[in-house]
Image 1 (cartoon, rainbow, N blue to C red):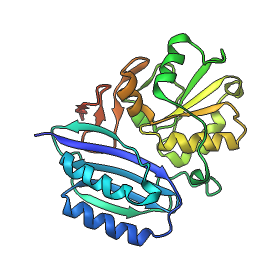
Image 2: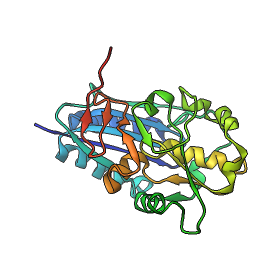
Image 3: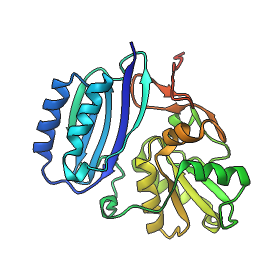
Length: 247
């Protein structure tokens, strides 16, 4: 038996958090789903695992709310349940940066899709002939499982450390096109917005993150696997789980 997994997020203004939490808890229990949903005033961050029909039913119900009508997910399969329980949590942020002036729900930073990024990396420059640099916005223990070739990494163990770590980057990075990336897009979206706020005018986010890149472009320009925060440990470029060995 295989289990269906989806992950997705959306920055959107939410004010009825308690009501949403109750509805999602009821529907998740009814459909026997596992996973985690984070809700905050800035939006939703969702990870679900279960029977494919039941997961799609939950997403169909979610999209009946106009705020989530365009909610998209990345999907994969696993031989085991990726989560041990189902829970809906209310948070201050759906991804914690601790930078309250940043409001992603008010507008996204410019992005680049996976196939375009692959093309840029293949040719060695973007469509304007500018050199392309990649910035990994994930934690150091995630990077250890795999990352893009020659990506710039930061010595952080928590995303809230990103603003301070940004000060370590060389000034010349602002001269080319800089693409931020993360697992599924949520961190690199905030990172790109923050960097624009700090004066990086040529920074983009990788739309859908590493997982969307795997789905559309495979393993080219990437080495290793992608760490995920569930019982699958990490995903290969074909989106199959890989077991992590603990010593």
